[in-house]
Image (cartoon, rainbow over all chains, first blue to last red; front, side):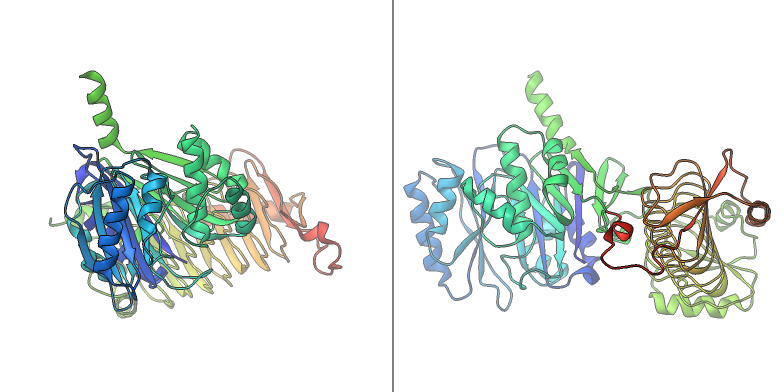
Length: 320
Length: 246
């Protein structure tokens, strides 16, 4: 099952709260864990946002100071106070850091994860992935999702099939070490190990053995090499084997790709400048109090929706 | 915002004495019970705010009233219908009319996957498009679609009839037993063991009568009749060419 949703707002707004309500309507599709990939407002300064998780049996204070020491070694100085959040009953500790990027995203990631028991959930100029075990309501409350202001984002509630119920195996996944690229996925790949072997030969890294994480890295690699998002998504339809309807977000767009049968549904609706995507229409109706014109994404297709708030800003920069 | 009920009634083609039920605040179980009760005493029952929720109008029996959902419905609307007449003024999600045995479901918009899945009798009329696997494993009854149907429609149908006025996707009528599909317009491809047979006079007579009854026009182009050739009724498992469609 699994339920996923994505929203693109016309202007920065309460993206966290909207995704929380939408995702909360799909609890029956996957009660194991819930996650959010949120893109905040366009920043005024160059700083990268890091969301990470300290495993349950590790001393969180010690781990955090060790992480900060490690970051200094790659010239990534903190630009603000760390935010620390306690997870659920078995959830460990979560923290959010803002820092200078330093040498490179890959070096920064390696430096942070050099501290044992620390696992990075996301890094980006705007992307923040917050994921935890529990329902959308529980996770949103615990992590202050409703207060988050941003331009676009995705949410996912998971029914664990291929791997266990675990914070790290929850969606969304970050396409490490590619900044600002995230995925939510409904389905399962059947050529995972073959893809993984080929990608490992190209020195690509993964945090987990989860097939969805692999798709994110696969797409992000192509974006880094100059493919457009649409090209990369389209190529994935024939390269990936198995069942998939996934949402792939970058700092400026959300795209989706479906396998040739698209048995995992995804509906699209545009309401007053907002683009809304969800596995089920009734989830969108929780947020939008109007009869919606919805459309299923067809089988074997790739679609990209640009984030208007980001492209508007780019235009402003161009004209000034 | 207060709703002008007279205007709503007019839009939905309802009479002014139609009884309205607000789906908000009622879970599917309580709503379906309320529908049963109300339907005994009035001609038309209208459900406000269906909000694309699942399991609406499940297990209804033959009753005096016609049930109108004023908006889109979610999955399995009208499932196990045993004689009620249901109109959806919007789209329907997966499995509309699943396993129905009697009655009538009219969807003014389009339907998602598997409309009429495993239905045994009754009639479903879809004014928009039917999704993939429309009429999958149906064992009786009729489905009429004004638009097109998606891939694998009629898949494993045992009996019954699907009439499509504007084309079908890939693998139409794959692995059918004894169902019949009449399709006008372009067909992506025929499925495993599906074969086109010429319409005889009886077929045409039946279609003319059916379309008049459900109030649909005769299409511009000719109908094609798709049936099972029967090679899959008994087959050697080693002969995969026959049954593998992908």
